[in-house]
Amino acid sequence: MASEQKLGEISKALKESIERVDALQQRKSLPLAVRLRQHLAKNSGNVTNVLLAGCIFAVAAGRLNQQSQHQAEKDIWEKEKERLTSENTRLEEELNACKNASECLEADVRAELERKGWNRKSLPDRILIALQRRKAGSYTTGNTATNAAILPHSASNEVGEGTGKTLI
Image (cartoon, rainbow, N blue to C red):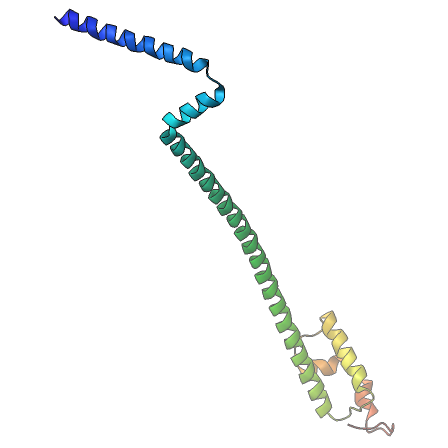
């Protein structure tokens, strides 16, 4: 019985194989467009899934590309921000140094104006000398004793000795 059953199954499988071969031969004679249409009709679910998976892959690849471009732009902007921050800090330090130098110069000029013996004609020359000395780094403080030491001694002798110069 068991052998008859196996023989029946084998003959049934053989008949199905023969039918498939006949169907393939019949399809072989059909035009390509018809065969393709039949294949798509039978496997439309699979084709839809493949197309959907391809679309998802394309979208994911596009998003990944956008993300990498965004990160590259972000890195560039961060480098530029760091450069501008350091330049801003440098300029603020330079501004503070100029401000301090101008305040020292103003204090020096005021102190010299309050001293006796300065006339108006020599004031621009003395300011120019003080600026040149500051640029050269001769002195950095607003100390009037130091300033008096670097200014020409003839300035203190000009006043009160009958030179006829106008006093401030």
